[in-house]
Length: 380
Image (cartoon, rainbow, N blue to C red):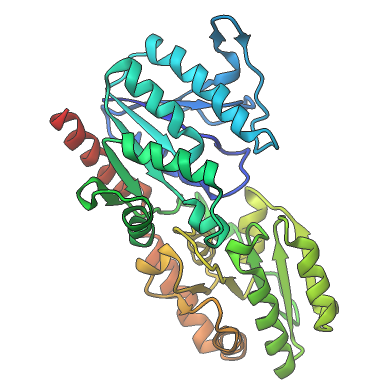
């Protein structure tokens, strides 16, 4: 089975969960002996792991009449233009490469997938990691929605990272439920999880790690922190990441009078993520709308208890995490306080959570994707 995959991110150069999921899924799928994946990136950096798949840079493909097109490899201001250029490259590769099925990750690569399907006559599956309804809290960008809707309409099957996202695809994008499946994300196993240890310190550490945008609910984290600090001063809070709400959150922390207990270390990746999570006593993801959310699994993997919103896809598969509504800052604060003040609760969540996520494997997600491939190809 040869799969032509279109994706926008791949480790170690990632800006969010999309790259992490793309890596984990392809690595899990590659464990199937007859599975061969060619992954198209706008701009590889040369240090990507290609031991289990082949990566082609869109920036290295000769396009008739244009030559090689430059890509930022990120999310620039002219993103729609880069999506169009990527689509042009797809029209070249669709004629040059040998493949059985096309797999497009997220809205940025849907046009490329549609073009490859039209030119090759091969079926297309798309992978919905998020929709614009998630990213914008309902204030949908009509251009993005149009690209998403066309990709879904043209796809032969749609894979979503959670039942939550599946419902959005069916209800907001008018898709046939029989055409839409859920394939939950997983977590990449750590080679040596015991090397990540908590450093001895007096204060407890509570961490938020992700894009500091309205989708992720950072203001609820700050408000919950303020409630906790009304009860005890033996806790510090970390908001790791970057985003358009960073300055607002710094101002809110100052306004609540808790700046001396708050830290903003900026964007983290790779080993830094495991280190800060392992060093934390609580991880919290108060997302307003989270299609899945891999970071709580990464936290639990290194023994850090997690608090997640009911409005997150990972809440569908996690048993040993505390779940609250994103807006319920009192419930969040109570959960944080209980974990940092009661060692038995911390120990139970730490041990059971680690055991749980170690059984949520990308290999199993890959098997589900393969069944979808087979079903689509057999129908084709």
